[in-house]
Length: 319
Image (cartoon, rainbow, N blue to C red; front, side):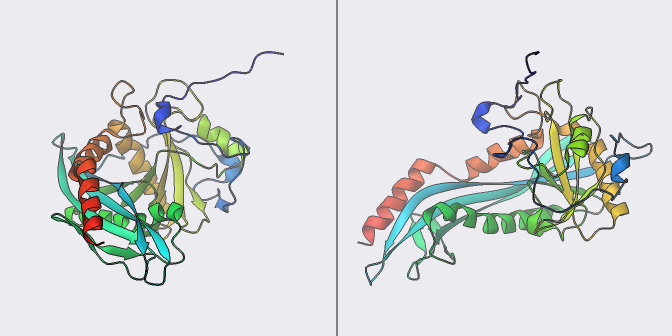
């Protein structure tokens, strides 16, 4: 018996893995309904390269958001009950890449903060010159579920900043799933970490067999958010089967022809933004403009230690 082959993931282990298999292993199927016969019949699935005549748009907008927990808090209710909470900061921004001029610039950024808790008596927290408005969550507000509550306001902030920067004919790329941003025109969701396999083993083999600069056929996902999807492989050195592979999304409200048009557009647009391992520990999936935007946004959140101190002082002042 020959020893099995193995590969080393290009990502720095501190950031997880570019493909995260479930407990059943990489071949474990997702429970989502998949229509693989959208662009091509499933029996004819093959790698698709750039189509003649398709060119990248003149302007590409890349939007991302970051969040940080500044402090964990607890409330003391009049009836003796107590509720956990999170004081969180979050920021969203958009980078405008002018491909015609070969220039990129920050087109907009905003910072938000909030106190996320199920406490019925919680009020806004003012910590120095910073305000944390109350975002009251439903249910009992368990502490381990509160971080997810930050995603809604963060997504709304991403929609706001990207909408203000849009121009006719541009392409908007959202870092992560589209979720409730599917109504935005000419918008792609960019998923760089693959948590699930949606395709059967034969179709997955087409995906892992993609060469750099190739994509899979478009398929339709029947998940809660739904939508058209496809995989593409960014420029990457030979390595693990999923190295350099990202999954793309676009709105389910589009026709299959419109989805295929966006898939072709993504293939001639995104590879130019791919990062390199010596510059980014999540290369090539962490696109260069996104990496720079993340650094800028984290700086805009402010000093975490200072905010923790002023939050602590604000809590003491209320006792």
